[in-house]
Length: 111
Image 1 (cartoon, helix red, strand yellow):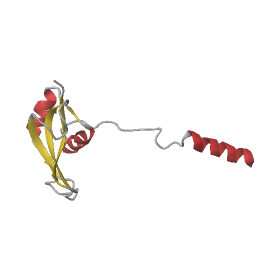
Image 2 (cartoon, one colour; image 1 turned 90 degrees about the horizontal axis):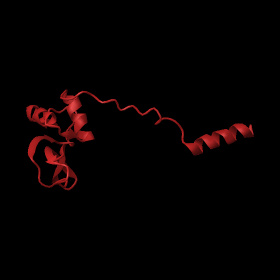
Image 3 (cartoon, helix red, strand yellow; image 1 turned 45 degrees about the horizontal axis):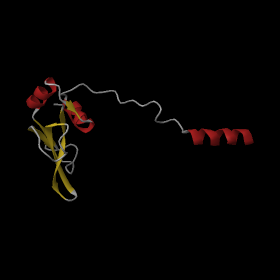
Image 4 (cartoon, one colour; image 1 turned 90 degrees about the vertical axis):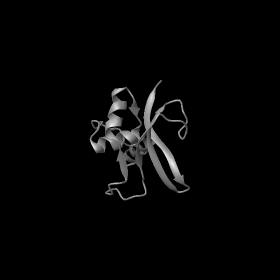
């Protein structure tokens, strides 16, 4: 069984609240889960202490058991100091695409 630490959505329409859970990766997003590990309320200000609540000891337990967090949850865990920050560098992100390079070459050739 592949266990993931991920978010499940709660709350009313346009008023999201999320639970951080440990779940089998085959289960649906809002379906059955193994354990509740915390909460996340994106509507609160970023500096609010109750925006993200984590049960850090239980999260460490699941990470030791081989659970893998989703990208969004891993960012929360990095901010809390539970896991090491990942390198998210994309050196090609700022480079122009193929069509833009063609336009630049055409503009240089016309001059």
